[in-house]
Length: 463
Image 1 (cartoon, rainbow, N blue to C red):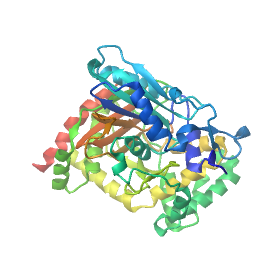
Image 2 (cartoon, helix red, strand yellow):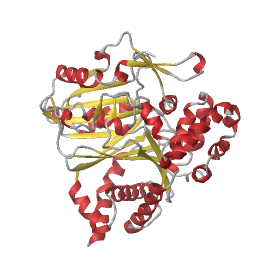
Image 3 (spheres, helix red, strand yellow):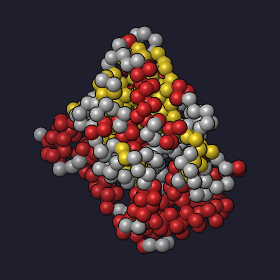
Image 4 (cartoon, rainbow, N blue to C red):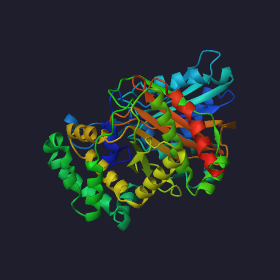
């Protein structure tokens, strides 16, 4: 097969076919500058450092007739970068509220289907008219969120000094071989099981619980798959319901990372433990304020399978899994929430569940579309939120000499989930980004507002 065409992997195909008008599978990122950055400058950087390096940014998706067989990436013969790098201007004087509204509107707007599935909006007039923002929308079938964050940061002026951001090698074959390592055997088992999914697709569309049979190739795999499959539906709260197309967006003020690390050292836990425990407390506060039932819920948490010291391959793709994390919203005190969350995170780190989930995603990607939808609906009942944490550069980066003031991103809310929370650390600070369904959670800023108090309550445990 020539360089101008490549098959889409089963995992990438699974994310492609998850798209719904009310749940678009886009990863959204926001890079902000406190000064004007000319559109032509941004256009040149994206052409040179993104499109010229990563072939997927000039390829579109081609579905086979009747969607029988895997999709392909084919070169877009009519590729025009100005269709993808789009100028925009906020009305003066625009602040954070106006930028949040623009982000929400773009999250609700699908990407053009007959072009490479990405756009970057160059937004002038931010920060009271003084700044610029780059609002990137990239379909999940291109790559996972952690990889795309690294790809966007690889456009920075000094990215070439970091060998871990990108490699010019194509590495999907290497990833396939990696499945034969003992620690990742469940992935190989569930990949094999994908063939069974394809042949038994019609029956699975009406009896998705039979997916448990796919894990019979190993005891640990079977046990992990059974745990995932036997989870009851998440409880009914204000976070669950029928999704609509409109979304809402909010984000926190930056929080100093050293302050959080000091608390973690004293409490004997990770930064991720503390941040997620604070989010659990903020969700609890939000639900109480809405008069909603309050109890433990579950969150889908992406688990990166591509080590951060390994470069992102130029052929990109999704190489991550999802863990189902109990979120201790029902625990009444910050200390109880932290203890419960740390225990459950430690269990996930030691279990085979992320490997099994990755294999199931591959299996889903090899099934007919109607079967994909049935299985995804089945799994979508298991959680109420998507939560992810991505570490960024420890020092500020710049594009064409313009320093990136802040970096935010949001993962899509898949499988009928109404709440997405993203944690991103950049230049010694942490920002929490929240995206939500406008009908079910119309005020994500209320959840964001509860977060600092919850974090302070966890820090007070040290005293």
